[in-house]
Length: 75
Image (tube, rainbow, N blue to C red; front, top):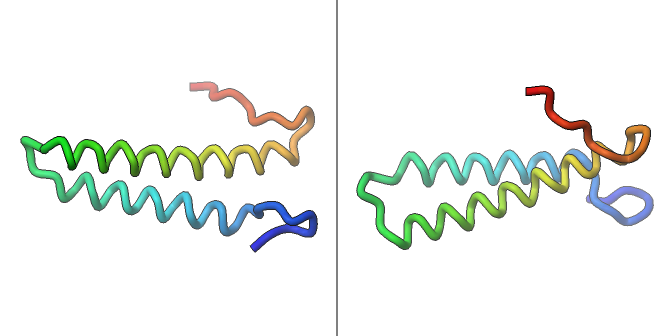
């Protein structure tokens, strides 16, 4: 699903981010120490995918803010 300009929209982007987080969680729960190199590589790939969706979502949120940037965390 895209907006009128043909770009991504919040709903589907958030859904994919949440889906990626759930997949990462399933992988973490399935890992039994000691984990092997393949398990670690798959985790790295999952985390990269999750981060990509997170970045896309926060960039979309930022479009609606003054200055077009996402605020820094106060934590």
